[in-house]
Amino acid sequence: MTRAAASESRQHVAREAAFQAIADRFIDRVMMTPFWTTGINHENQLTDNARARARGRGVKPGVFDIYVCQYPARSVWLECKWGKNTPSEAQLAVSDALRKCHVSRAFCWSIYDILRALTDAGFVLHGNALNLAVEYQARAEAAVREAEVKASRPRKVGKPRAIKPTQAQVRRAEAVRRVGLV
Image 1 (tube, rainbow, N blue to C red):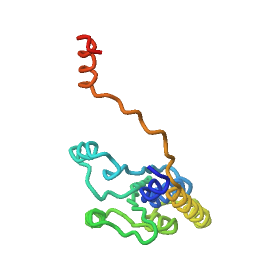
Image 2: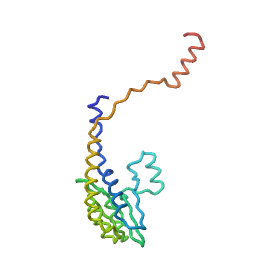
Image 3: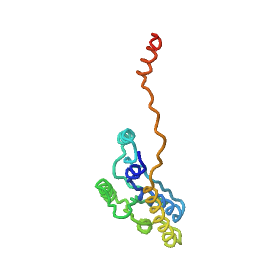
């Protein structure tokens, strides 16, 4: 594969993943203890086989990216978006189901949206949360730029793999050698 072909084949830019990583750090920084947060491993990030096993265990499509809870009984689901990306139909369905259960949830395109969602859900936050949001928004923008740069770099072209004979070809060669034709 040529360098031009390698760079053309690399199209996916992990903007939301970069944003989510910074969002998780921001949440860890502004939440007052005791609290717990986790990112969610989505089924679309798995192989076909792992996705089928996940569905068999009850993993549903459209689950939000981050779950946050804090004592006493506060929680919120956050879906990280970036740029002009919009929620999928599955994410809208999950949002509607959470709304019907009176569970806080939010679609967040910036660190400020995350701060607003945490505040609206009644979380107890660090007194300097707004200033931290300014800092972490700048970090998120830098992380997304880095993801874009990384995606635009051509992939490293390695050595081509040696063609290995199949088991059937090896057996045939062994048989020919035993007969003495070689």
